[in-house]
Image 1 (cartoon, rainbow, N blue to C red):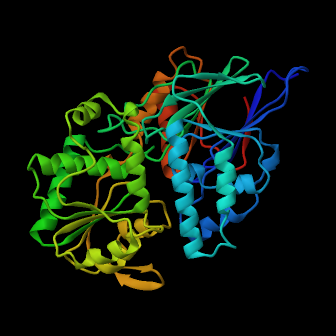
Image 2 (cartoon, rainbow, N blue to C red):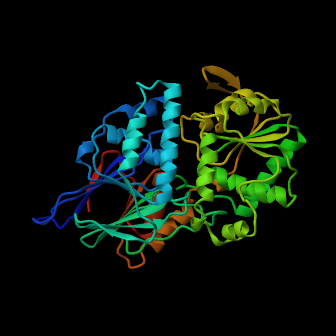
Image 3 (tube, one colour):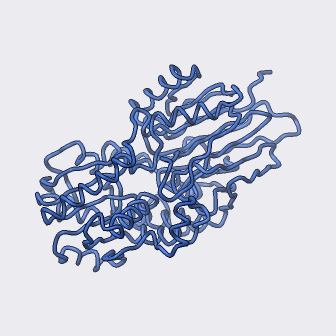
Length: 461
């Protein structure tokens, strides 16, 4: 009999940044042990119309055969197909941190609204009832708590530092420890605690969004942000910031809070035009126990780090539409972060053709999205079936990313191999160029076997 104990199959998150979906099952189990199948994440595939059609295809495994689903964090590319999984027969147990569960409920409901608006309810991936059923079987585990399951494996969650509630999922079975990083944070964060490292890992499944590049220094980031805001004010323009509703928005708000209250930039009207981001910010405010020491000290001193003069939260669509009546200069923060939906599209339609406008990208733009097209310098983009000329200034600050960069990803692998047990690193959740670059970097710098798996590829470990 083979000495291999587990099989891992990569059903998503390979060759692309989105669609995380990994299956871990036991093989060669003892007679008194039960067979189990564990999913890690079940995310939406993003990146343009053709790729998004893949979300409608049946899963390449029977949803009814899955016993457990562990969620690393609440971004849509990690949770977006969970209600579809439930709709198609999953009857197992779902686990995440409490904050991830709270944020996921919001994000799934918001995604359904967008799907219903863009398509119709009959064509949506799932329904309100499917979300309700999903949340009813969703249990929670907090950081630092080891959960032992009767099937013979244990799970331990560590803080990945990526967004509120995000976790590294460590699964141990018969002395084999498999670590799923989810998305790793760009520590130190202005808000969250630093990313934790793993210990005694035998296998690591690691993200690689920025596997081939490093972020700017944080001091440079702040100076760049100040420069962009001051230039927008000087030319009496509009600063558009397509922002992810969870973490990116909260970091930008805290940074604006510091810059305005310290007098480093003039106070101008700032609109947070995203009902989802507004609700997510409230969840952040209720979970300050996960914040780092500096953020807690600011809050304890009486500073609302997510609020400042002339900030307006626009929940209703009428308020959003009225933003254009506010004279320039002004700043509009709106979802979605890659311009694949949400209110940012209406603002891009309104302002992209104005030379006084600046659009600032603060996160990764997946190939095929409107955000990526603008960033790549196209002269025209199609929004709501209308062609709009791009005359705006285009800026990008990568260090606002909530993802770990290349050098620190290698450091994570190195520090997780503290007892030299690490046998293999699977590099996922990155475009091919970034993933293959990180694979080679791990091999060259650490002498550890690394691989960039293909979709559907399986490994016995």
